[in-house]
Image (cartoon, rainbow, N blue to C red; front, side, top):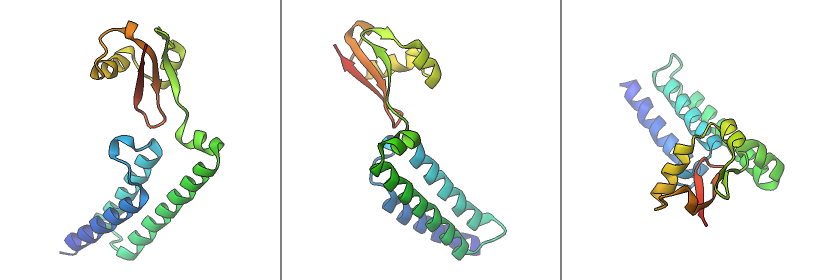
Length: 145
């Protein structure tokens, strides 16, 4: 019974914390934000099924992670340098119809992945694409000619 109570309290606490952290949809979360969400989820799991079932310890750990997230977010907002370090920078994958192969190898993106995004935007041929950019949040932006 205590496991169920811990799980319910953990769920409600996690729901509250995630609501405070960000209002963006999941598809727009940065890698940094995914890490925070998974870390908090892991803390909830430990409090639910681990040896230490203290809701106080769990809550304290989640508050600490949340405060660190807020601090790092504040630093990112105030410093472009730290924003680039934490979230990365957009990179050009396709420029004027030419693949930027060295860049694509560095970010582990295949031509087929870029073309799948292009097709989802109604582009049928590479000749219709001026730029393809891998954004900071992991999505690919396609710019038509």
